[in-house]
Amino acid sequence: MIPKDHPRYLSLLSREKIVNAYKSGILADAGMIAHGRGEAFDYLIGEETTETANKAIETAAAALILAKNPVISVNGNAAALVSSEIVELAKVLSAKIEINLFYRTEDRVKAILNVLKEAGADEVFGVEDDKMKHIEGLNHPRGDVSPEGIYNADVILVPLEDGDRTEALIKSGKFVIAIDLNPLSRTSKTASLTIVDNIIRSIPSIITKVDELKNKKEEELKDIINDFDNLSNLKDSLKVMLDSIDKFWRF
Amino acid sequence: MIPKDHPRYLSLLSREKIVNAYKSGILADAGMIAHGRGEAFDYLIGEETTETANKAIETAAAALILAKNPVISVNGNAAALVSSEIVELAKVLSAKIEINLFYRTEDRVKAILNVLKEAGADEVFGVEDDKMKHIEGLNHPRGDVSPEGIYNADVILVPLEDGDRTEALIKSGKFVIAIDLNPLSRTSKTASLTIVDNIIRSIPSIITKVDELKNKKEEELKDIINDFDNLSNLKDSLKVMLDSIDKFWRF
Image (tube, rainbow over all chains, first blue to last red; front, side):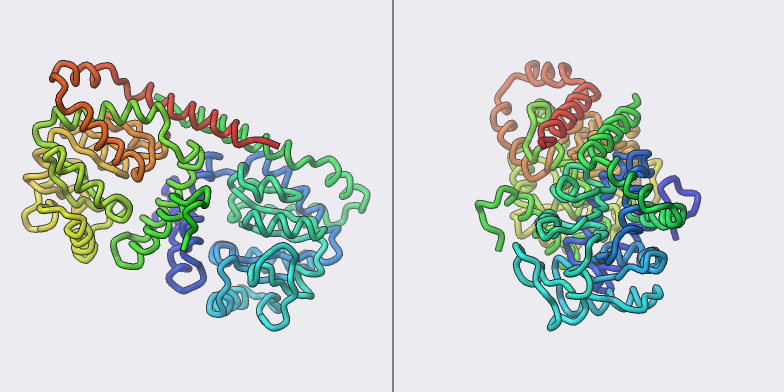
């Protein structure tokens, strides 16, 4: 339906995927509106992965390679937009995939599980409610996580997470990698490492980076992580956004 | 459901109204996502009407008072959020209300008509498809407007309009007042006058300003309009946004 040569083809395609996901019960109401907020911020960074985001992506890859129990947290928007890419990333990392929803209902969990299975996932955590453990500082069911997944993870990749949960995960001692297009959000400021980028670009980029870095020495990977400062990287992303606004502003 | 003392009460209330409007067929899919984009920009201006926006609001009031055939264009988002306020503004201005949709379907027109009638509208234009006239430069049905409404209007208030239609309306010689939270949008740049503000704040503010200005002399109102420069007002809105980003940015 959308012509491939449309200058905003990928953005319009994502919008179509989000609408379809909403209609098929994968997305909560808030997920569709959140996508719109994401569109606005993506527009402000020029709908491209910035050099600043690339630095965060490289560091994320290093942290995920070094992790003992890496977990990729999946919500409705991530399932709608990048389910195959998440499954692929989990495979190259031997990472676990866990469904973790803000507005958790059994139906949504099932619908997302189906999407992930269709995308090739062998095992998905966070599905059986009765086996969940609880992260301190959060209400049920928002704080309920899988004992083998997020509860025991050392590094968690959370595409599109809210501030409260990011904070609780950090407090529980985990290294939290957030993907968030809003460099001003509480999630962005709270996470151990924030990738200010669209998940449709950043998840494939993490896969490429993992492939590049996976045979490096542990020391080299640790150096990448130690050299990274999240707050200054966020400020750089913000600067890119402001410069980008200047560029748009032609009369 | 949402506690009244929540710091973002009004934003969350709007979101609830938008979701309900979507579920009752008033809003197209794109309308829900567009609301999310609006949320992001409103967040960037601090969810407050800026001094810059107030200047645009005053000028809009002057132009609407001086108009011979003012028309308020209503889409799904406007009907969902400010139907009563639009009806009130139409009454104080003796302005016409016209339903004008990007994704026009008979059902959506009917649903919006009901909302406007419930809000107290006596007459609503743009309802009967067979009587429509066409604005040059736009495809059917996006360019179809009511002969007594937009087609013959001299001043049109369009809360939330797209760039193509704004351009076509301007080319047809009309004074177009846009309300758009994104100061970078084509609509914002193309309109005769752009109010960079949330419609839930700016429509009530226009009513107040019309009340204040309605007994002024024609010359005084013309001076207000002549003193206003849309592009420089837009740049001021953008500056407010950038300053606001700085303020948010506290570590």
